[in-house]
Length: 201
Image (cartoon, helix red, strand yellow):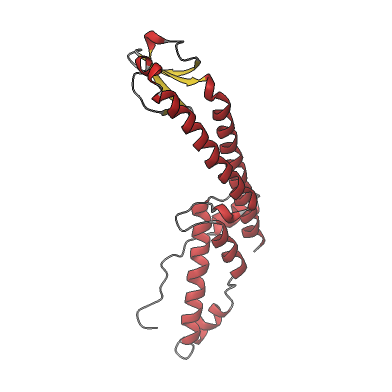
């Protein structure tokens, strides 16, 4: 047909299918490559069917393309166009992410109150929050070590600043971290379920 076939979005997905068949986990990017390939295959199938008069043999080959619309729908329901696992991919994921946002807000509120407390101002190197090892910490002047009770997670290259996790926020930090790990587990479970669907179809 004139202008050729629009093959943009098609990928060689055979290695991905083989990974899925072996029980492997496909990444969101892998799954987008698969759904992009299926979408392109359906488009090519329609074009060749419309051009059957000029290319009957190709149209016969295209007629055998399996559209796998259920698989495409499953991928689209779980993965965003940006390659993120969507909240509504599972009820548990939506719940964990809601709880995670709430836990983070409570943690940030408590930490900001510690920073804003005028009694703590002399001990702080800066009135800001940062992260070390996935946990929120505050920078205090090393000379005031122990004035704000907490766990030391790091120190600056100069040794003048200690990054501490206040004891007052330890449990909140733990709760937030546990929810992050629960999110990772549920994301992987969703990806495994969709990967298994790829292997089936």
